[in-house]
Image 1 (tube, helix red, strand yellow):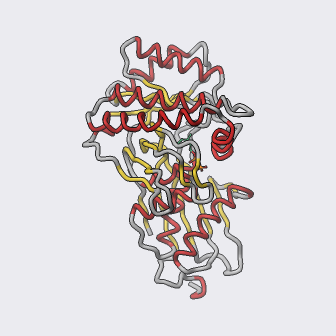
Image 2 (cartoon, helix red, strand yellow; image 1 turned 90 degrees about the vertical axis):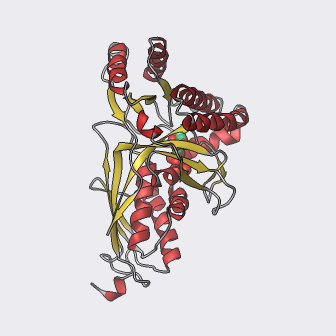
Image 3 (cartoon, helix red, strand yellow; image 1 turned 135 degrees about the vertical axis):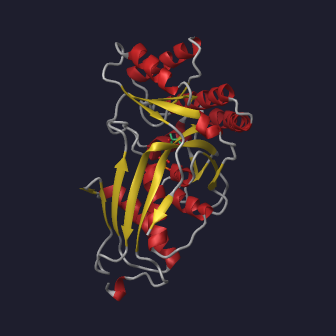
Amino acid sequence: MDPRAAPQRGGCVKATATAHANIALIKYWGKANEDLIIPITSSLSLTLDDLFTTTTVDFSSLEPTAADQATLDGATVSGRPLERICGLLDLVRERAGIDQPAKVTSENMVPTAAGLASSASGFAALTGAAAVAAGLELSDRELSRLARRGSGSASRSIFGGLAIWHAGDSDETSFADPVVDHGFAQEISLVVLVLNSGPKAVSSRDGMRRTVDTSPLYESWVAEHAGHLREALAAVADRDLPRLGEAAEANALGMHAAMRAANPPINYMNDASCAALQAVKDARAAGFPAWATMDAGPNVKVLTSTKRAAELEAWLQSRLKDSVPGMDTVVAHAGPGLTVTR
Ligand code: DP6
């Protein structure tokens, strides 16, 4: 190896990390500080098993004067997505006192057409791999803070199962922690109704800025949010799925109402989403534990018990087969936190 290419502080130069996607049950939508990605609200999420990103960062294979390079599923990354990757790499390099360019190779493992490829698993894996490759020894909390700078939701993907991202009010105080749940995360699952896996019309980044700046409903969502989070955490402590589900659904629908009141309006729901939301209500009326949540896209994720997830999936498929032809479904269970190998 060219000695010029090695990180200066005893780093291992190249590392591979795997991080799993997460879905927020109580949402992050809106930033108090855009540069540092400090959110306005704290959030609570479930990290998922089958949806993950594996990323290798190599600080040794490019000429010292080269620019960073990245591929995602074999395709070259350029433009804004590459800038965001370089931004995170710069933070790692600065901290490690190195200035080598990196070669980043990333693969998204998502079940066929799950439509959930997310920046959360991507930036969590990038952070883990880059930190180790640069020779940094960081705690999970420091990794969470760093991943947050790439994409807010990535701060939660450092941890498996249920994770809470404390909003905080500075770089030091805004990080995620695992939620002590005594195994409750294993008892809950999400049935993901994949209604459209195309690119989203408005990015989360732009959508949340517009909602904060223009929606008359944003403040009332934030005011309700504290109660939703309190309820959700109490529900986890009591292993009370219905209580968790009600808080999660109210929080998500309130967020979407605030988005729709923005100017110009942001509407991530399409006809299929509305049909799916109605089907979730019907499933509940039919006796299923089933509560909906939605993010910055049309897909509906249904919180349910692990025991009844497969049965609910089949029920929803049959219920929606005429109104939403071609719908895909994926059942996701609780998954692990970040792992890094050298
Ligand atoms: C609706 O983490 O993708 O999924 O911090 O701007 O990169 P940036 O946004 P991102 O937003 C996720 C928003 C959400 C809710 C959530 O995951 O809490």
